[in-house]
Length: 296
Image (tube, rainbow, N blue to C red):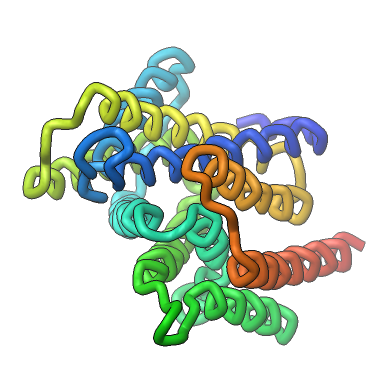
């Protein structure tokens, strides 16, 4: 497979597009989890819609592109999909109760938890700068949890748990990367996710309204398009260049929440999100410096 030609400006545009689309999925999930479009749907039903419609899009893409598929590593795919389904379901549950910007900021802890999990699972060595980045980001998450009797948000724990679970999913994605082409990984992931979600939704299914069907389809299509933009963006620039750009997801989430639900982030949300982003940027900066040192 021929590597994509390096094009940082195009990569930046693709990552910004992916960020806008991903924030859009959480916006629709919030509308479905409340009574904005009809009786609130269960998070497992929202997750099912995400996998069902995304699978349709990816199957269509495979039919058009006809990529050469290889023999998949089923164990890694099962692990990745299982953690991915749990993580996205918990995230969709959290956005029904807390601001989109808070849930999105907490989701940026994914790479931090993946880094910590890589110590026992991938036997990676973590240096002091990585530990500093993790500590800073976790401090921001603690602020967003508002750990006082009067302001504590229990639903924020759902987003935090989702970040831990998706961090585990990233471990499986790392093991899969290089073994199989991206479109095959997406195809198998969404096929398995749809299977798991179809079983789970049978216990909570309720007939959606026409507006809810449209929103469920929107989540699936937006997620598939976001994944495509993100994969192609990552292929066209260094990770150290791409990673900070993905943080604009927080801006889109805050804008959508204000535009649709009139939710204005308070100073605690702003402070916590800023600290999490600072931790993430420390990690990205350090990784970039290490890559430069190794390339000399």
